Length: 462
Image (cartoon, rainbow, N blue to C red; front, side, top):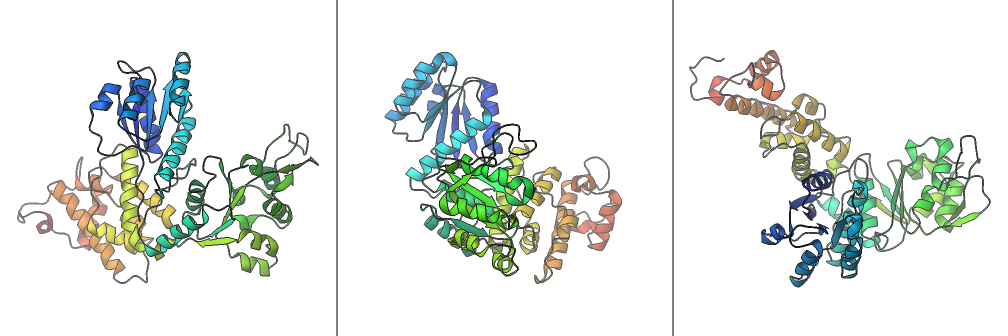
């Protein structure tokens, strides 16, 4: 099962705006196609329907409002966001009343525009009945949900069942399996998707500050509390609160968290005023909470309150058939971001990817692919085999021979591309990111000869 990237059309006569917005969208995993005028947009073939349109109000020739009316006549249903100067606000307000989704004034904040576009896409895809899972809205732009394995399909089925409810969900899985992405999917497929998704990694915050982060504090509540602060529960009111690594919350704080989860009320530090919220809780952990209960490290009542709808996220080694899809997805996404044109991955290299153990799961795979894309100079993905060899899974049959075959094929491919040139600028060693002597040693060890890359076997090796 694979979810493709959404497509946004941008119409603006300012080339800097087109370039900036397109780059912003590409970095977030959203495809963008830009046009400099309404006329150019209307004349261009559009085989794929957009998930959202971003229009400048003051376009040369046909205005953005005129374009909106033309699109309405053509029964284009995608939501429209207007970009407007202060003097164009009255016109834009009329456009919004006529059906546009939203408008932002120039100069606009990039993050605000990106969030507005995501909200429009989520709403549009939901209305069309597509169970689309969007990328996580986080600083690191964690990857989209990609895969067709039965293990992933079972998880997505559970997500589709629980998402429309307000039930508390507990996600369990190893580090790097995408628990945060599944939490975001649950939020996006729920009735709360128009409200805030707030995330907090409980393991990343010192225990002394965790209570303040969760529930907020009043000015002067403790040394250093120079102003009132709202906690994550307040920020997530009417939305969803994702509590990652819930097993790292101290026993002392767990009773207060239990009350907040169960009763939806709490007090800020330094205040006696009870605050009531409406928050959907999604928790996650890689730890064995029942074992922690037996060791008196986690409260049993809190566990049962969180474990209303448990979902087990499978590790990557249990969904190996998804690895080629993930590799192709990451290569495409990262090469586009880095301005590279990588069009192929060798069969041998893909076989090694599939046989590697990936203890860090999807996150480790993504990081490895990113390094590979950075190192790639040509159109075929260069794989730093020395690093990948450390991730090989010993129990996998023939994994070592597969690895050696892949190494050999990549070296031969580089030699063919350089007509046998090993050293110097543009040589195979440079192309592979290796020293000349290292490459020659590998060639001897893997029995790579002139006959492997050239029919002119008698020609001298450079």
